Amino acid sequence: MLDMIKTKIAGISLHQNIISEIVPGEELLLMREPDNRFDTNAIIVLSRSKKQLGYVNRNLAFDVAKAMDEGVVVKCFASMITGAGYSLKGVNIEIRVGVAA
Image 1 (cartoon, rainbow, N blue to C red):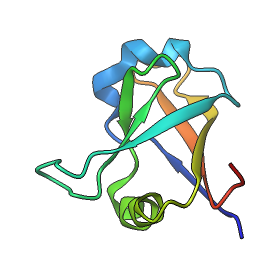
Image 2 (spheres, rainbow, N blue to C red; image 1 turned 120 degrees about the horizontal axis):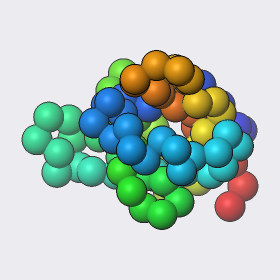
Image 3 (tube, helix red, strand yellow; image 1 turned 45 degrees about the vertical axis):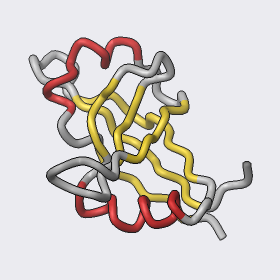
């Protein structure tokens, strides 16, 4: 069964310089950060070049982290770059839980 979660990357304002590398449709990398002092379910979102973009939204991280920890295949794709023409841009993502390896 495939669950698809549509959300935006949290904390991306600290990583604005990386957004120009992102192309809608490209796969992004997710990495668990269980030692994060603010949230043991934290999941970092990385570009293909392994530069940090931000985090999976804290409200979603528990379920996604649980799936990742259980060995369920979880993939993440950039769906849209937002904020064109503004000083702060964002990245909308799709997280697919339970997709075939």
